[in-house]
Image (tube, rainbow, N blue to C red):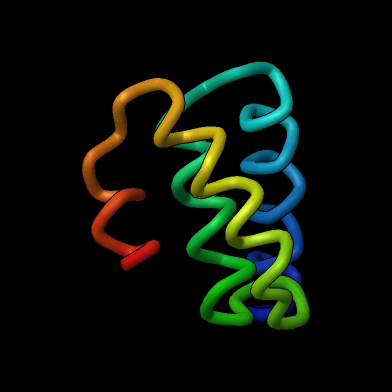
Length: 65
């Protein structure tokens, strides 16, 4: 059941991130960075952290450094 919840969380987080939600962009980047609900992918993490940074998300800046 946990994997199902992770997949569901990933689906909705990705959808919101693509729609421009800054919190979702940060959360999606973190999911990619930590390999939660999706395979670890630093490139995708950096992409989504960058999108969040463009909107002023300071937590994303911290994770990028």
